[in-house]
Image 1 (cartoon, helix red, strand yellow):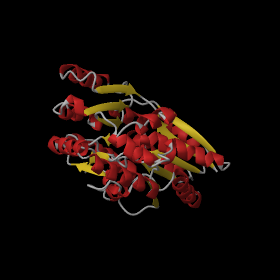
Image 2 (cartoon, one colour):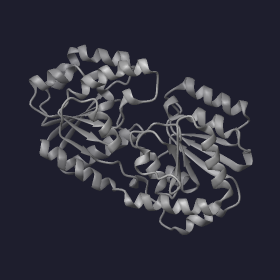
Image 3 (tube, helix red, strand yellow):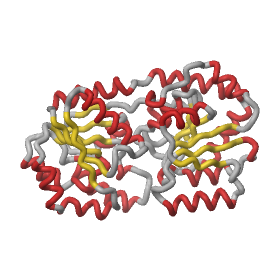
Image 4 (cartoon, rainbow, N blue to C red):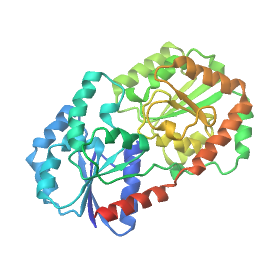
Length: 358
């Protein structure tokens, strides 16, 4: 098969959606098929809308003779109108890979209505879907007219490896010192780092240390707010802004931590959470989004209602004071990881789905 994939920017981008897309491309290529990446420049939403009136983009897409065209749904503002022409002129199925539904993110309602108008037009312009979670699937079903072929293929957590020896869990939890917290997400408003810092600044500094892993370059204005708060609250020794890390570096940071914490981020799945559970880290995540598909409160983590700082602090205090509970929840987190699909299982399901379409 000759398959196209439309994305914004580069497949090397370190976010869950791009990692998913990259693993899928590698899997398809390893089976002898050609995958051609069509990279659109990453700009703001309004400018992306103008791509639909670009004759160059339309002709480039329409004249390529694909057997199947994949599109990262993140690109929907650039494609909602182009897809209608492609379906009339081309003979290949158009498949959207949906990692997150933009118009269902927590934000200003009026802005979400604008996004919904465009996103619904896009979703109704494709032939089939790949969903990363049941939550994403159910959200899209409410936005699409009629049923289309679809597969729910969960991201996996085994990309970085996992904790090989459970002996590490007890020794790590009982070692003297503060709770070592880790936040793995790009420093952007929707990830909620600023709210997290404002909350944990209320805890005694000797009880916690936070490592933040993720790009510091995507929103410089938001980064300055984070840095200003760290200085204002005298948290320079409590918070480490590491920048992007991956592979063995990220695995090592997870292995040294006690808890994965990102309670104010609305996730389409939450691959970083599951990767952390592979290193036996209980999760403090959001009750909204898809994290609740694998995080069970009081067993392998806690789920926080949006903006509930008191509950976040209560969970941290509880795990700091009761290290036996931390050990128990760490074992449960690792068990959850082992119960989830591996990347090979996920990609096999997607590949079978695409083969049937093609």
